Image (cartoon, rainbow, N blue to C red; front, side, top):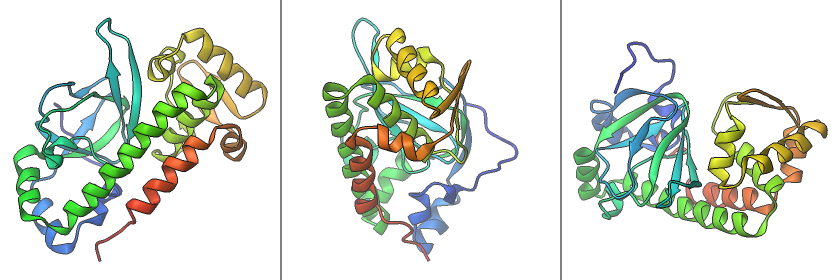
Length: 243
């Protein structure tokens, strides 16, 4: 994996790392490794034990549920709000899903053994990570309900908003094929949904790129799943904890 020689982002651009106490930060900062996360990079396969915990700062990671025939759908999104590698501090050992870089950018990683050592210390950061895990469970549950009961138009709006929350700009790198794979639907369905949003003046779509023109109306158009999962995250993971 290639490491940057120069980094724009700071480790504490990640909200969980920003929650480290001063004592924890003095330990973690020596072992955090900057990493360049490129599109399509697989951070961990389903059923394997993570070698690192990844803390994205400007990248977005998709957690994908894979089927035997190669189909996939996104069950959760991780950006500067979280961490990839929950089994390391939950004791499960292996990832139940595949973690793939969906939007490229920067991040930091911590070796698995160091994460496990922090768990054994039962430091304040452990409780932040556990609350984050509960928020992630809520996101997975909300995604399952959304995929079952809500329209593709609403699902697309929700997914665009999840991306916006984790990036500093209003532009998203998405092909229609990628969106279809993330939502677990046919590409034609995504094309029709994106066209509706563009005709309504909510987005501007060009090949491989989506600019959100009216976020407020996008929030009005999506289902309640987006607001509910965001509210749960804000309730469980108040930031920052550190001085």
